[in-house]
Image (cartoon, rainbow, N blue to C red; front, top):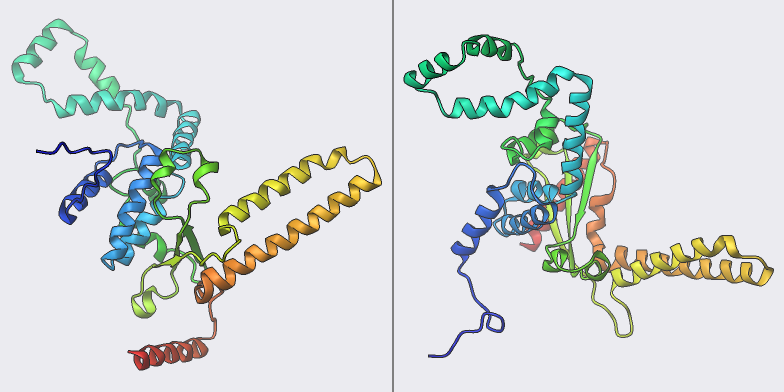
Amino acid sequence: MEDFDVFTNEIEYTKPFYANVLNKYVKDVPSTPSGPNYQSSRKLYAEECLGENNEADCAFYLSESVSASLRTLAVYRDEQLRTTGDKIQKVTNYVKPIQDLIDSQPISKNDEKILDFISSEAHQTAEILSKFKIDDDLPFYKQYMRFSSENNTENFLKILKKLPKEWTIIQLTAPYNPNENLKPLNEYRCEIDSIYLSMFTNDYLDFNSVGPLTVEIPANVIKEGEQPLFKELFSLLEENYKTIDNAPFLNNKRLVQNYWSKREDIDLRMKSVINVMDKEWLGGWTSLLTGKLQDETLRNKVIKLVDATISDWG
């Protein structure tokens, strides 16, 4: 029997097995998860939801894949502000874990008698501790911000319904890349072959029951001799910062002229990158980035034209 080398042979997992593993990875999350792992798992789960035409879950998990570590810091900072403003809150935060442990393991009557015999002050201590009550009634947005059961698709849609009708939030998300957890940022950030565009708005929820919209837009086709779009973009940004850092050391006319010549070259190249992104990558999907039509009559006319076009093309 041939030996199987797991490092060279590809293992094909069945769909249910992969879905079960991913579901456990996503659902069994600690209260303060690892940021990179949390973000990667949410991206993977969002891709599965998009493949199943589950738009709401897809949008929710993509929204969760953004800045998990920063969100943890925000929760921690909020806790610090609460304890700083209320000293009793700090005391009760120490008491709560002990109280939860006691509540989870009720004391038998025999043990209670023993404790009463050992400590005559047990009742007095219990009465004092009972005065310290923790105010767990956090605002809804703070409950949602924490990594808890409140953080789910249903509450995500509730938040969207509270957005002003005039608002449209666009999120651009790079697909899952295993190198995110293996390579430094400056090495893997150019490895983008598509992008997820998510649109969150409250304007259409009551109009036609359309929730958040997500589309995957493949990258543009690279012509011979051209650099990949993001490689060119980050190269431009590095050159831009470098010229700005060197600006204070320009001490003669020739260096100043070279500086402005370099700045003009960077400006032209940046305009070319933006044009490629607009025309060759995003294409018609740029319509999602525009403002809404305030005139309902005109909006209804556009909807009818789009519906007629879709029905004609079958």
